[in-house]
Length: 309
Image (cartoon, rainbow, N blue to C red; front, top):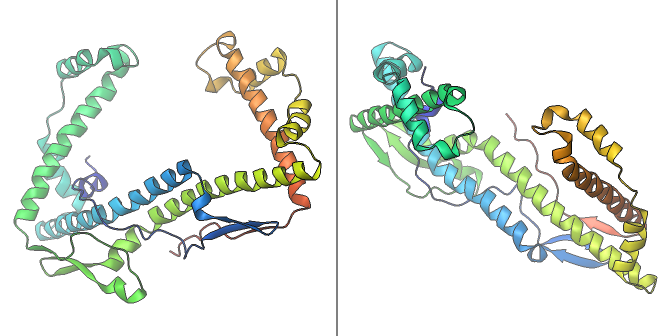
């Protein structure tokens, strides 16, 4: 049966501002032996990741407004007819969509054969499901337009912005007949998405920050020893790298056999490289931990708090 979730997410409009920082972000992210590391010192790749994540929230805010408009209209129409929302979707969407034929699925397969992962028999069921889903989307758009055409919808704010204070949660973003959709409705629905974005933003910044802290401490240690960072890395990491044997690679393959689609001989070099990289990371992390023992390091970014349900 066609899902309520798919119905209410179909019509999406994008825009707005993020408002997805967990708390006011300090400009100084860390202090290492008296030297500040600021937000602008993070790498461009990290900033790009953060921008992409925050753009996701910007887009989701207006999308959520349309989702709530569609949801309200669907539930109101279902109540008027004396059925559930799912029953109404079955009646107006699923029951109006013909089942795709094998001939139609085969034509779809032939047009895209070079991109298909297997022969037709293996992917036929997936293709039929995909074709049916696309037809249901088309029928849903028709039904959504029908419901919207019969309603009085007033969108009061075109580009939704996050609340600057608790009072702004009462802002009315849209009216659907006599029903108001407020900033509070939007933010409550997006709470888990915003939390997930906060987690990923924190992880990206923290990983970059840790690298910068480690580099600074390595430079300090090199100056103390009157040598170079490269020389320390050569001694403490590359010089301690163990030899990874074919037997170790085979053992790893056997322990993770369900994750490989090829035989051992075909993936042996990849496994050897993975094991070497893993060992190098272990030694690098151990060196960083040792350098931090005698350093004064204060970090001023923290993981986000789980939103209250």
